[in-house]
Amino acid sequence: MNIAIIGSGYVGLVSGACFAEMGNQVTCVDIDPVKIEKLNKGSIPIFEPGLEAMVLKNMQHKNLDFTTNLSDAISNAKLVFIAVGTPMGVDGAADLQYVLSVAKAIGVSMNKELVVVDKSTVPVGTADKVKATIQKELDKRGVQIKFHVVSNPEFLKEGAAIADFMKPDRVVIGADSATAFDLMKQVYAPFFRTHDRFITMDIRSAEMTKYAANAMLATKISFMNEIANICERVGADANQVRIGIGSDKRIGYSFIYPGVGYGGACFPKDVKALQKIAEAHGYTPTLIASVEKVNAAQKLVIAQKIVKRFGEDLTGFTFGLWGLAFKPGTDDMREAPAIDVVKELVKRGAKVKAYDPKATHEAKEFYLKGIENVVYVNSKYEVLKDAAALILLTEWKEFRSPDFEEIKAQLVAPIIFDGRNQYNAFKLEENGFEYYQIGK
Ligand SMILES: NC(=O)c1ccc[n+]([C@@H]2O[C@H](COP(=O)([O-])OP(=O)(O)OC[C@H]3O[C@@H](n4cnc5c(N)ncnc54)[C@H](O)[C@@H]3O)[C@@H](O)[C@H]2O)c1
Image (cartoon, rainbow, N blue to C red; front, side, top):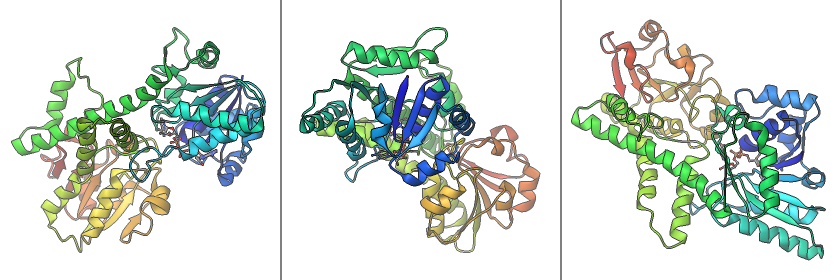
C-alpha cells in the first residue's frame, strides 16, 4: 500500500520504517529540510534501538523515502498519517497549529479519495477540526473529493519504539466509515500473526483513549512517588512496599517504581492537556491536576536530599551525574528530571560532571545549553574523580552493575544518591557507602 507519513520525528519515522518493513511503499514528509536532507543521506536524527538499520534497509530496498514535498507524497498515497508534534501551548492545552497546517496542506493538494489518519496525540474533537480544515480547502478549490478522517493514537514507548510498533498490545482505530476501518485493518493486519488486537470505536473515544492511557500511567507513577515520600517519613521502605502491592494482580508491578518523576515528550504535556480539555468542558479534574503537581515536586526530591546532606550552599562541591535522558534507551531529554536536578545544584553553587550514553548532545545543545558549571564526559567513571557524590537519574543498563570499588576509590567519599533505586541488591551501606534512595 502507498502510505504518506507527515512528520518524521519519533513517531513518524518509527511508523514509516515499520510500515515499509512490512512491504508497504512509504514516503515520510517533514517540514524541516535539514532533517530530510540528513535522512536522505542515511543519517538518522534520533537514537532509537533498531531504527537506523530498519530505515537504511528499507531505503536500499526503495520502499522508504523522504521529502519535504507533502503534495508529491500524498499524490500516490491511499493513507496519510499525520504524526507532527502537538506540544504544550502557553496555557497548557495541546497546540494544534502543526496538525491543522498539515490538514490545510492536504486539502490544498489532494487529488483523489484519501484516508487521513490522526496519529499525533490530539484533544477530543480534533478529527472534526481536521475534517473541516480539509473540506474548507476543497471548497475553495471548488472540487469534490471524498475523504475520511480516522483517529489512530500511537502507544509506542521511546527506547522500545520499534518493538512496540511491530508487536503492538492493541491498535486503536476510531472511524466513522467502513472504508476507513477496512483500510486501517489492511495496513495493520501484518503486525498481528496469531490473532488481531484491533480495538475499533468512535473517533472521539479513540482520541480520549490516548489521553486516558497516559494519564493512568502518569497517575501510577505519581501515586507511587507520593507513597515513597510518605514511606521516607514513617520509616518504611518504598521498594519493599512496591513489591508488596505489585503482587496484587489488580495493581501489577509495572509503573510503580519510586523515582525522580516522569519526563519525556508525552506524559507531562498529555496530563496537562487532559486537564485543559476537562476544564474547557466545565469539569475540574482534581486527580489529574494533582498527578502533575506531585511530579513537579518529585523532580526535586534528589536535590533536596543532597542539600540535606551537604547544606544549602553547595559552592565548592562537584557532583558526578549518571543519566541525562528522561529514560533509558533514548537520547530524548524533553522534560527530563535531570534538567531540574542539574539546574537546582548549579543554582546552589555546585559543579556537575555528567555522563549519558546517548543524550549528552541534547543536553549540551538544547536542554542545558548555557548552564555554567556543567561538564560532560565520555565515560561513566570519568564523572567520579573529585566528586563529592554520585547521582543516578536514568537506569541505563550500563549503570546497573557498576564497579563499586572503582566508584569508592574515585569519589571524595563513597556517597550515592540513587534516583532509580538500582542498588538495593548490592548492600551498599554494609560495604561502606552512604546510600540515599527515593522512598527510604
Ligand atoms: N514520542 C513519543 O514517544 C510519542 C508516543 C506516542 C505518541 N506521540 C505523539 O505523536 C506526536 C508526534 O510526536 P513526536 O515525539 O514524534 O514529535 P517530534 O517532535 O519528534 O516530531 C514531529 C515532527 O513533525 C515535523 N513537523 C512539524 N510541522 C510539520 C508540517 N507542517 N509538515 C511536516 N512535518 C512537520 C517536525 O519538524 C518534527 O520532525 C505527538 O502528538 C506526540 O504526543 C509521541
